[in-house]
Length: 255
Image 1 (cartoon, rainbow, N blue to C red):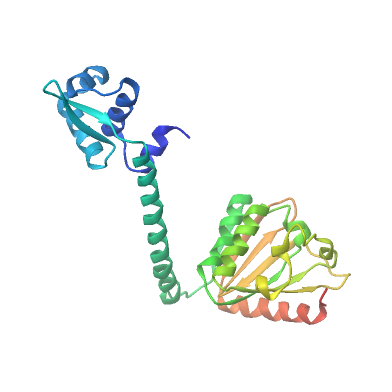
Image 2 (cartoon, rainbow, N blue to C red; image 1 turned 90 degrees about the vertical axis):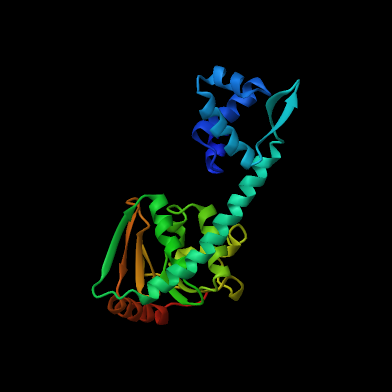
């Protein structure tokens, strides 16, 4: 990442950014000198300096009766980034409340279907579950295959967020998923600590597409080499899939 990218992140762009980079390159300068070095009019340089002064990135002093602009401590940028993080975090938290209300108050008169492909898009679709809180969810999940499809760092992050949201998971896995190393991936284990109950399907039952039932949605993900999936939002469809899941759950056994 370049300094320009950092400055853009805290809202220092255009003229203000050019002036700031000039001060870094050539040190303390007058408006006239900055104007000459950047080929910008003095009035434009003044505008850029006003922004930088307001944000605390530069300050002015007098040298031999001439106004000179100098850079402030770079820590100011770090503090600005911290402020940005706090603002985004607070905004995201407030939006989650708004989004929850939108989901609850939006009337769906027909099923909604969304298709997606590729690892990153699969992770985005799985993140949709994290908009909810205090719900029970249900999966048929060939974990041995799925850890090849979804990044393990993402799975760990997803688990932690699911834990924070108190989202419970009852999972049916394939019989050979018993070989998954829970000492390496403890958050995949079936314990109350991880808000997960596990059962293993009969040996004769195998599948390569996972599904996750939650709220009024079912998300399907191919665990094979095709790396695609889709989400269906429909209360009627959830009812049908939950009935199927219940039947398999009864046939499945604890580890």
